[in-house]
Length: 510
Image (cartoon, helix red, strand yellow):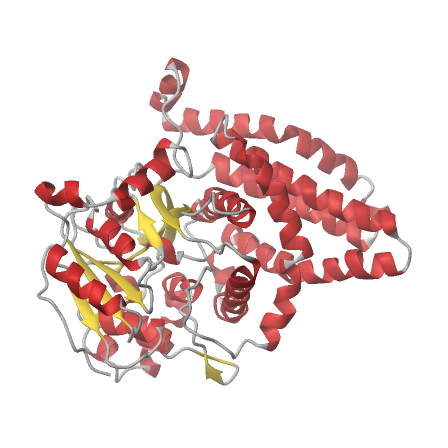
């Protein structure tokens, strides 16, 4: 593997005089993710809301938790009523009860405990074990690409339009053959970015690790080639790391760039909102986000640098695991206190380990709701199924890695992580029982109750969306995603397990 082209390093943020020439990529990111309230933080409320924001932190948190409890009270009443019948419930009904309890807990944690780390300050007393970053640290912003001629310019221009200071953009091309290279060379000359052209196809993980050989900034950020970032997204993530020295990594907030293309993209867009706003927010409140997602993943360099060769060389079930899993890279940050020394010893001959040695720390991993990024989601069923299979394979692999130590991070992170694992593993079993076994034995009412329960859960998530986005009618798509997930996607887990050793480097959404 050789690097055949590289522009001089330097500041890559587009000069103010040239920002007018940056096309609608960044504007669309801002407009879609903020002005049209797709994943945005709601604007400040009336005077009562301002008073609440200015109240003592303890009072504000107490009032918020009380309000969340009141909003969840109808679900709590239903849960309490059904819990009285628990000894008489069958397995399927008990499963529904557990799902309802988990949904209530997730909503309560996300809405009562989560605070955006880019706007809140860390502890007043510095922690000697976690040296703080500079207020404006240097940032290396990395992107790996292969055969993305249709989307790459929009993505790179949105990266270059970032208002984050002291940023260098590094794009590595993994031997594209569709004209992507020529586009990158033109953008390099225009925007001053660094472009690395590999002379052979090595896969996404190895391409990113090759780019990391040329970075030395305090912060390393990643995005995907089908994404468009809001101008302030990267800066907000870097601000979060600077404000909270214990944070080793943060994830941005992602929505669908092509949300209006088809019905599939609409329901995915609303699903993305809930997965970030609720699921990641709940995990973030414990500092244990289990997946810093690829559309915008920002790390302290010292939290991942020694583990990059382990990421590139990851093996599972006796074979190389080819997917560039965001979950796995996040796992190195979450678990290095327990697995860091052994991993570094295994790769001690790598320059990523022998060149510099960073101490293993009990890092926190967070989520920045105000850092908006849009990504193209599959518009047709076939590419969506391929994407979901890839994600489920990553879930399976990560279960055996992160699952081996997540219980050590405390009861909150453990319940969220293993509870999600049990839900994913049980989904195909419940689908078989209610959609195959029940109709085959004439138990049509059981099938109907299962479908109604799935739709009810989707409506709860949809109402949470409507709470965050008053007047936005797209919340109605959320129950459809719950139904689609339970009826169609649940079957993909067994298939993914059987084909887990098979993998390709592809991001096609068409």
